[in-house]
Image 1 (cartoon, rainbow, N blue to C red):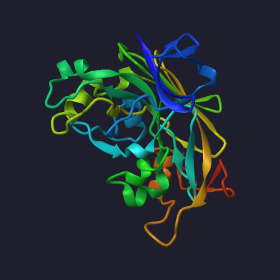
Image 2 (image 1 turned 30 degrees about the horizontal axis):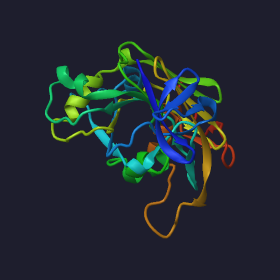
Image 3 (image 1 turned 30 degrees about the vertical axis):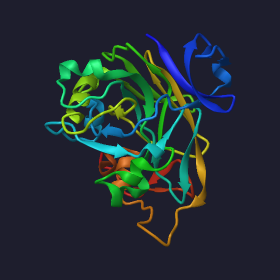
Length: 295
């Protein structure tokens, strides 16, 4: 396996190759990984994401998978890199992590068979498909603001080639505590299937990213939280949650909400069965039931 990254080197974007604890540019310049300012490892023209794919996530939502995968789109302006801040806009409360694996396209492909899809994949990276569920009531169909707001698509730190995606562990940690712990063996549709499915009608070009789904236990994070996604063989992607510098404008558009749908998604798929809960104070991280739970 080989790993490439994109960093700011002497103030300019540079493609580099990992060599132990250092990153080496094509002209021989070296930078320590610990000191590097990371960019996303590729520059996609599109970011396509699958909805449900991991069995633990399906069980959590107490639902069934559709006969074939369904997808949504993240704008490329949502992209950021390892070490970047992830912004929760002021006035929003329900920002959730979703640790995922990013598939990166290496060759232009259209109308290919799943068995051939591996020939069109450049490699894989770690990703976090953040969701701003405050807008779920109005954007549940397109997921545009829920999943597409600026900074909500960290990818990195590198692009790893020749990685075997079978039976690999994926974990998400918040402030060092494990919150998600899954395995690619849970995936209903593997990487090759997803690429071939999208490429039936959409041309994929080098650098395009497909996000392949998340295991159970996506939950809300708060400003100051440090979130790390670890994937076996791909490395660790770490980002810090911050509050945006300006509030959501109130003179246009739908406003952030905290409906039962929002709360169910943000706090767990069985929310409606655990009773509606209310925050104990502004920005509180702990909740107290306002409805007696069934025994």
